[in-house]
Image (cartoon, rainbow, N blue to C red; front, side, top):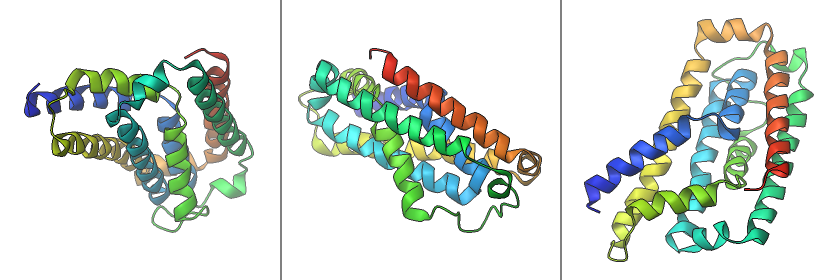
Length: 208
């Protein structure tokens, strides 16, 4: 597959995948509504960086091995499900004083490193990722593909992920929209936390 053709295929598929509701989307929404725009962008950066893990093992041919290994998928499913439950429980514990009077431009209460790490781990522990990347990379990779082209595709996927979630963050942190959310932000935090728990339970109980 030619470089431009492969780029178009990757862009189209990954934008659709990124836009579909899932743990990453819920987490970014929760961080933005609870802690402001900066927290949402940092979380988005962590998610984009998490893609690098999947891209590296996929480029080495390990994605197919993981996707066909019941043990590997079981371990990832347990880790991912438990991490989603952890995030969900934290969301359920939100209270009014934690959720109101958010300054969208200030430091968030969790700190830069922890917010990025939260997004990173949420993406890395997604048990569906190895299967997704097997399908995606199979469409565009070939034995003759040069390393620079593979690296470009990988970086481009991360850029697309960051751009999409940045758009989500800016929409949710709009001053008019956000001011409406803030009155019931702790309830929204709890609802999104509940969604995380349901996703965690689904990950733990559904065979990938």
